[in-house]
Amino acid sequence: MPPEDSILDGKNVYAVGDGITRDPSYDGDFKKRSLEKILADYPNPSGARCAADIFCETFVEAGDDCADPTEIKERFIKANGRIARLNRKSLKKVDYLVNDFYGCAAAGAVISEEKLCWGVIADCGVIIYSKTGKLKFQSPNSMTTFERFTAEGKIKFKWETQEGRRLVRSQYRNNASQMIDGTCASYGALTGEKTAETFMLCGMENIVKGDLILVYSDGFEPTLKHPDFFKTTYNKSINIFEQKLVPFNLKLAQEKYEKFGKERSLLALIH
Image 1 (cartoon, rainbow, N blue to C red):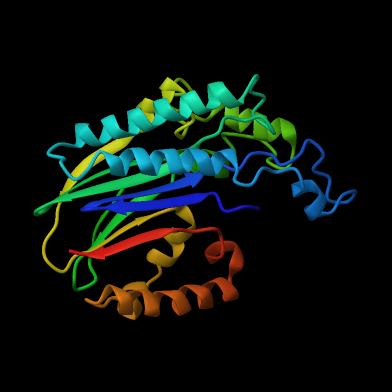
Image 2 (spheres, one colour):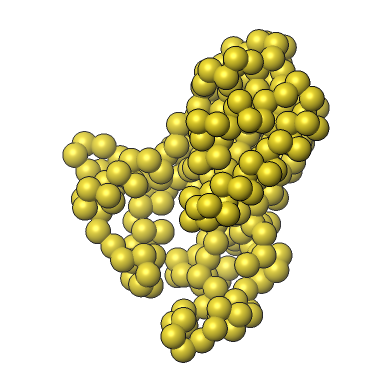
């Protein structure tokens, strides 16, 4: 697979996009075809990566002037509009499989003095640790409820089938009317659909000197929440932080690839 994450930062502004992988082929039978053949026609760069790039570029080009979380949402809305134009240009008919919407999960943060304005959609996120390692804040994940209902059997599908993937993408993505037990069971993503706006979550947090701020795609979340992450990696020198993070993360990925080895992107800074 080509890389489908995107990261970009400017002065006091940080963005991560995680492109949504589409079906690489209508014939996904691994018993009949090798992985290489199934992926042979998958575009590189992919439309998912283009959507992630669009989000990051749109978010960062708006600059570090942000006094209110509503301004963060405006950046997400603008990026979603640009992704809509990409889809109108690229797709004739959406089938939620090989011709699914180009889209991405996303997270962004803007720092202004002692305030951090953040925005997220789907399972990208923002985490703040104090200089002593206390978890001060983690942004909400709009996929959590969908995943819980799935685990409880209240949402039933087989992801390994085309019907299952089409069901999830068409009925449980950006569909605020999909209710279970009085709770919205859907999740959001920047696909260009206006209905994505309901799932754009934004807020503001206080930060102080020494706080570690992390903007990440979902593949990094298990590492960032690992009980040894902070004490192993935290250092006032961001270069040393990176030098410690890389072997720590790779060790975890080697031990449990399914949990720690997914494509992952991270922007980290110490305030």
